[in-house]
Length: 218
Image (spheres, rainbow, N blue to C red):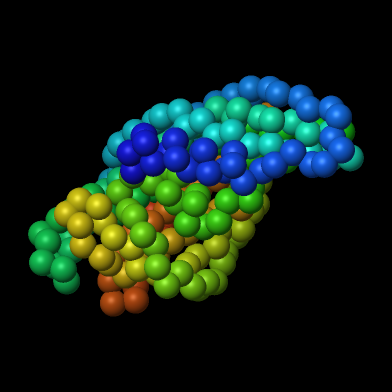
């Protein structure tokens, strides 16, 4: 995914949040998160490599009791990949197994904590932080399991779908795994993985768990 697409997504999020009628107190603020990354030991164990660690800026407006706050959330995402064989689509190997980590700052208004990307759909979350896949279609829930992220037990949801691998531009049956946000320090941490299906087998689910359970975040 290009920087332009991230900017368009951020602009769409801003456009979708209007000012509540009668609101007289609007606060504008900028909050930053810190990166969440996979440990070197887990990368060596799973065979994944670091692809990118970048800042992603999203602007949202949140409110409570007539008080609105426009937030520029400076998020971080880290992306890791592994080359796998894709003989079924005529490719020898491709960087098609992707694990990403998104950190976003917690926003608190009058005692209520908001997640700046909490209302994003599955597609939007993947578009926000994935650079390899596009156009998720036919996404269906395929179960969930528990996973420990940064010392907190949370839900890791699993989906089946079809997605286009941007390079070389082929469409694959994929599994998508997304964790529920985990509060850690002043941030929320979310894990996302996308990888091809092999005759209905989840060949990467063990590696995904290993990486998510090894996350480091200050």
